[in-house]
Image (cartoon, rainbow, N blue to C red; front, side, top):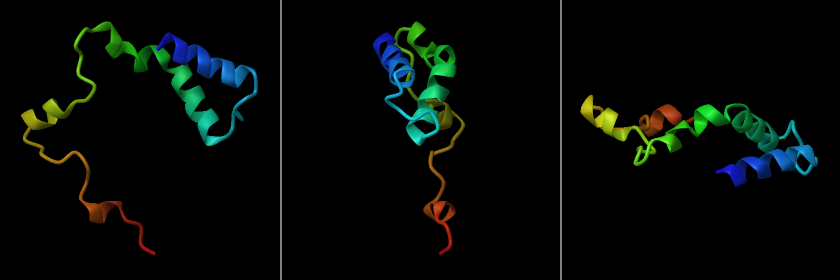
Length: 73
């Protein structure tokens, strides 16, 4: 993860990625929130998702029904 962080920073610093492009915006977002977004790494065996929480609350589907995701043409 440290190498990924360094690589993303280098891409932006060396202007290999346009800062205002979709990729550049995503990289800047990730770097700005690096500590928060990688906090799960400090807990051995931490789950990468929260599906167990949904299951405990009786919520079976994570994604909304397909009709809610479509845009009218």
